[in-house]
Amino acid sequence: MEWWRSAVIYQVYPRSFADSDGDGVGDLPGVTGKLAYLADLGVDAVWLSPFYRSPMVDGGYDVADHRDVDPVFGTLSDFDGMLAEAHKVGLKVIVDIVPNHTSDQHPWFQEQRRDQYVFRNGRGERPPNDWQSLFGGPAWTRVADGSWYLHLFDPGQPDLNWRNPQVRDEFDAILRFWLDRGVDGFRVDVAHGMIKAEGLPDLGRNTVLPYFDQEEVHEIYRAWRKLIDSYPGERMTVAEVFDSEPDRVARYVAGDELHQAFNFDFLEAPWDPAVLRGVIDASLEAAGNVGAPTTWVLSNHDRRRHVTRFGGGLTGLRRARAAALLMLGLPGSAYVYQGEELGLPEVLDLPDEVRVDPQWIRSGGREPGRDGCRVPLPWEGDAPPFGFSPARRSWLPMPPEWAAATVAVQRDDPDSMLNLYRKALRLRRPAREFAWRPAPDGVLCFETERFLVAANLGGSPVPLPTAPVLASSPLTDELPPDTTVWIRT
Image 1: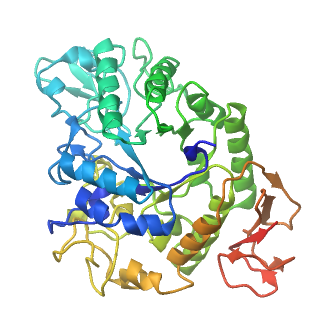
Image 2: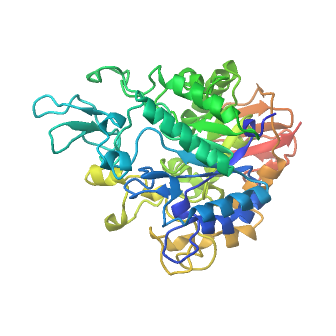
Image 3: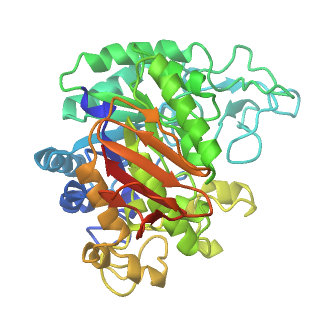
């Protein structure tokens, strides 16, 4: 079985993982210094969010140079050293590729190479169509000669014209650049973007988005798959595809396209057994129909942390523990976002003046943005920045109460969230079989080759047939609410 079909992949948001040089911002040497922690945690691979040269309008997803490291994160030599050390300790490395857009500071845009971007004339004083940015406001910005350029995200992120062969050739070269350096795969940002409907029609009241999930996008990935398969070592890709039904997402992971796609239906599901069971069934069926593994994910750098989504406080933490064992018990691949293994909540009270997310800025503060899930990790100590940086600062402030959630504190607590993840990852094995088993109301119960997994999402305890090998919460002779157990089969 290829490694990526059952891998647990840990997402590192480099700006917030570990700072080596004291500027308050995480960097690649900081990642290198913590690889032993990740190997000990038991994950199989690391996915790094963008570290490329960028003006950082959108946290590095506005790339100015796809072949270099931004000085805030280090150098290409630092990347090579990190990659070598990761491989030495047995970790694969996946990097982000951002093909839908570039920064407006990219040489192509600065040199006004308009054929590489989506420029159009307006309708009088109005934009070319009614499309709206996903960050708020119109998706078009006017330039000095009166024409408009498309940006589905921030104005600092002009959309590329993927109908231009030069754009396709450039990204082939970018993929080869990183594959030649030895990376093990790519996470493809906005993988369902890139191709826009011919004529750029108004959205109007149409529910079919003319700028996402267009048929021609699959031609790009069939070409990418051939390129990536030409390299040794089971290199892989994982697609960010949102706002699509499971069967539509599955088209991106057909045998001759990408390898995985994130399961956002699972991430967004409420704490409801019927909804979760429906999502699991639909996900397994859609992926199985094309021979791809299903992925499972609870949080990432764009979504509110699941401790908070599941209710916050002790309730949210208890449910997050149960959700972790539910997710890690399912067949397929799982993604862990940095800090979820510590049970970190969303930081909801960041001061306005420290927020930098364009969602916050472009909405005039109406949308909280994503800074709350990007607060740096607490490693050790009694006060911020908790060992994140040798300086007494971090680019986003850290809550003082995280003193009880540091890696150092949790490492010595056998009942901590960190040790729950460590135990689960040591017990977890690839699963090919999956079958639901009868269970009381409110309980999800399924069996794989290795475990019977029972998750009580109801409000009352239920009988526990036998002693589990792992439980998300303390047990008696019953399975309490908001608790998952693994029972060896």
